[in-house]
Length: 548
Image (cartoon, rainbow, N blue to C red; front, side, top):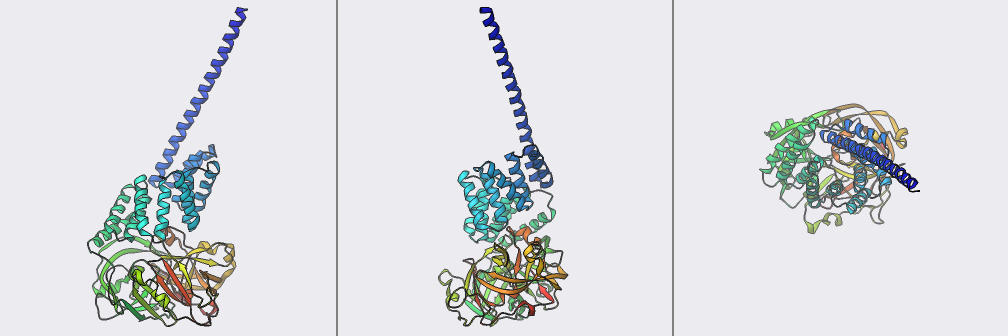
């Protein structure tokens, strides 16, 4: 009996030892797999840091091929696709992580970033706030909310939050780059230059064009930092000047550097900085103060050299703005020659009204106490036709405006057949509305192409045989026009630097049907329909058009 008990004990002990050894074997295998995966994750993120996104994507996809529920690999893939502006791919992978782990702060931040990149502001804010409720130090969410503030012109909030994101993750170059943008927009030129220099130290060395542009920008920012205050308004507190609009663009008489002879400048809400032609700059003795890199443009199908200049003053009627940075570049249009483009940074110091009916532009010095003054004393049109009124008295409507990273005004536009609004640049310097090539391929627009073609003058040159389509209805806020012609152009040069997707440009053939009031401090624009029936696009078919 004792012998049998002893044998049973040894058999049990042997079985237990075998099971224990088997557990050790599995544990060892799991630890080896975990170590192998961790090594692969690190390798993938290193590839991202080097700018080798193809290699990073391959690494993360290989991991997911082995285990489709590998959350870390899917987060890495989402981040890699976001870097490549594959917004749909980044969104899909982040959403799959949230299905597996609803409490993943990183996944919510990635989802918010993809949504923001597509221009869906409200939903992106919800995701960023969810991420921060789960992890208050999720840098991607901190930076995401800061970018929303930047786009919606809350610069005092954007700058400190981007500083915070850069402190949480000092190795992520995007946070540093965006800090440079926000600091420059806030006229903190030294901080902006410092941020861009730091960006060049940690960013991938493979993006040669971008690095060349930033080197030139740093030189320009250092120069601006030595000039004292910029865009200083002086002269009278208000002015009213006439303008021409033969091709739907307001062309003003402007005096530069105190010269007696006025110059022809296009009012350009599609550009942050003003631009002066190389010929005019040479004639006035305006020399480059910095240069560097090449820029791409909508229309022209190419690149142009970035050259920075500086003028001591710009006078519009009786108002004056001193210390004005400008771009200097070649102008290609001889159809309607102009000397320059008056950018947002000059007119944003004023409440600005553009009346396409009387063809006059009015400026009122910006003060908090008179923000609404021009909007409460305007003439009210009667018998408005061809537009859907938005108020019982005058059909006027106020529309919120955003500003892209690159300094363009952007508003939400409604198109027939689309459930959601899309973002268009609001551009008084574009003679015709533009739809992006990508949007033109949507099913709702495929049958709207017209047989005629257009020639487009852009910053980089001339584009021939541009496709034209006719939009059945286009709305900004609740103001709507029917049968609007639109040129089809590649918007990728804009979207590479805009921060959130722009699907088109709202040009002069739409804007000319309104009196427009810009309150840049409040980030708002008011539209008043003119007192006549808008013409259909059948009679708006220019052979030559202008784009930014």
